[in-house]
Length: 435
Image 1: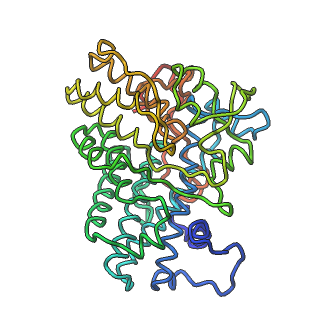
Image 2: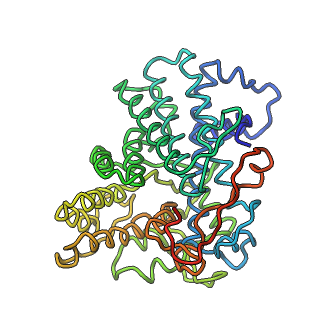
Image 3: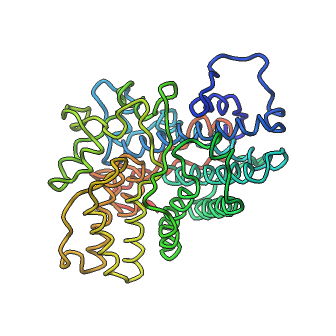
């Protein structure tokens, strides 16, 4: 599975961003060798790389959302989605297969660009942009996978791909992000890349900083997480755009296919007046398979974008870094900044709440608890909730937050790779961090 050639998929994905009609099979389509050795082929593959990752964004959002306390299923949903909601999985379910397959398709395209783009006459500026984006989206794909699977393959191009543990994979993610930043810093201006290759709304450099902050946080490297979060411009929202021809895949899973919906719990547990509720969900509360559900607000249209990160995530990473380095006053200040943000651009969640009084944010424990509380609303529907529940040690067979630690390894991978590990012993009987 991980070594298959996926150029047709990458080129089909390019239609979303380039506006080309690539739906029909072309008997004169270029070969793999032509794609990787021609300027036009490399540029098209770079466009397609973004389309492939865009699909993977949805496949990061929905499995963990169903397994955690964010998403539910309508009564008419397919049984595999209903099973995932209660933590029951088969290794052939879409929730298991989709993230694995799609992320490795992204990684394959990124690897091919990294290996072959320098051999094509792109010019320094365009080459820098393509390589920076390739390192970034490979890192982002691996980073999402280590939040879904207990072990992953970092180098799928190897003759015998090796599964590695989370610390090893996380180190690889951070190294790739370092390479992405180094490439981004090589050239100040990239007219072709920014104008006709990169998707509009995708701020590559800011996304690199955001991903560095996210994964340094996961590594508990608080000084590095803080430095990356401070380097990012929190006035910028970096997004993946969609079109009427290539629709938002979360919209497709929810509004068109009616397989997933947001749980109404996010409204029930919110503080009165929290404006992030209306940003995230809308519509009537209806009965779901297990619990009441509503409709997505942020993914309510075929063209609704998916954010690579929200500025509030970076602010909360700053708060957590301050708290874990005993800068409690700064941590409390940042928490209240997130709570009180209101007005201005409507393209991101903002709480519009009152600040918490000082006595409620006086200790590290109080601050960390409120950070996780704010993450629940600030990052709703982004796919990040499951990892937070693990970090809080709230995963168990009877948990109200997440009933399993990891996805199974896909049957398709087990059938093609001899060294796939045994599936994790899941779920734990008592609350666990799963590590």
